[in-house]
Length: 387
Image 1 (tube, rainbow, N blue to C red):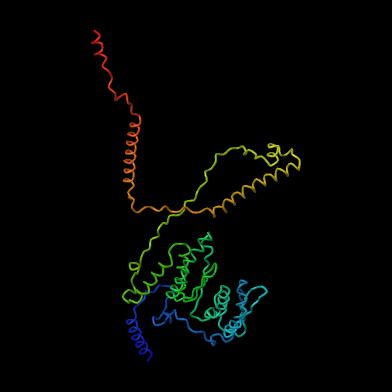
Image 2 (spheres, rainbow, N blue to C red):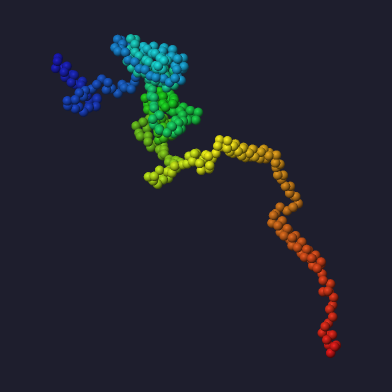
């Protein structure tokens, strides 16, 4: 019977081996089939924690604490009962210390989930970074993760940092809202950090977009375009195992002309120090004011003061008088006169010539010599008669 069963087992094992693809085995290695090496098992699935997995509880007390800014004190004081009730469901104790300005979470005897203390630590971190309490409490769910991105140390210049951070937010927070929709994450830009909540895949995309924006590698709008195209490409099952780089746009960074920094010309080095400037006493000695007595000095100061005052009063009076000066009235032109300036000049020149001719004639009439019109006696005839 034993032989038959062994033969049957051998036939069965052989049939199973024919069905499954044979794997290459390495000698001396523990290369056996594991029960979890099954394609039907989803290794990325997060099962909900069951209290039966850890009935005894925690052996040691674990605690985390974080500081919060002073402007968050009033809000945390108001919403602390909500936070305390949410943590109590998971068996976590919490304390708000307003004197030291810190929040503390710690495990208790009722704590069963060993990872919930890490989630509670993330909760108080988000609360200190100005995330609203109802949103921050969602981090206690197994599907929700968080990432706090520090952006202050990526840029040295404060003005550039503020400008690039505003690029990330966009006008009326439109850029930030588009990123939230495409990545499926909650994003809050606060001070020197960016707090994000969502899945691991979404958080990875958010970190990439934020760092590229602050480092001025790519504007968030271009990253939004790429994410939108990737979302459309993911809907096509034929492109699931292909490279998408040929479909995505390639944005080239343009060199923007920057203002040239004016460099001061270096003066030639001289080992001798510059000449000493004269002091007030030296100037008084040069002008002779130093040797005057106190009364003369005061009289001189008073005179200078009066002169300055007189100059100022004259300037102010001139300004006041300008208001009473009547404006120049516009000259009314005769519509019958010709508008052409060239014709006016020609007419003026001809009238002047005419007047000059008339004046010359009048002068000539006044200087008439009567002797010129009287006939003179013939001298040559007289001489002939005498002969």
